[in-house]
Length: 126
Image (cartoon, rainbow, N blue to C red; front, side, top):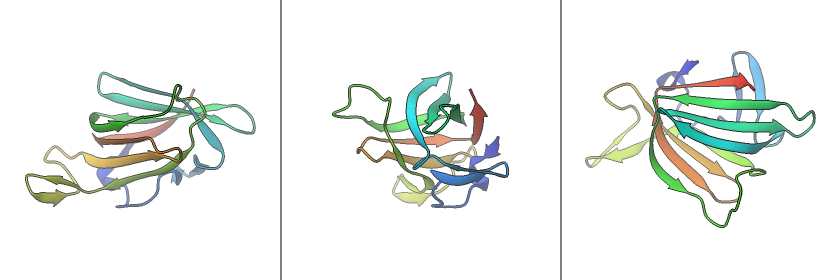
């Protein structure tokens, strides 16, 4: 698990080195499932070549925006952008919350998006 605030600002995590292993979630994987429970956000991806499942796991999540339209199922969506950025809070642009969470933007190629606060991120094999 990697602390959200240790992730480089505006670095695209869709193509990223997690724990010394490079993953290209944009080109090599499709989204299989998204789940949110007990402040854990899991985005499960299927490798387009070998069918193996991996998940991006975000901890201590608070979702602020969810915009999924014209989609009957999550399965098959392509991750376009995922990065830690800034958001406006009480008239100020901030990168990190008072409790040490980073603000993330997740966008799919097909137009759907999520915005959320998270404490950490990790990659897990399903």
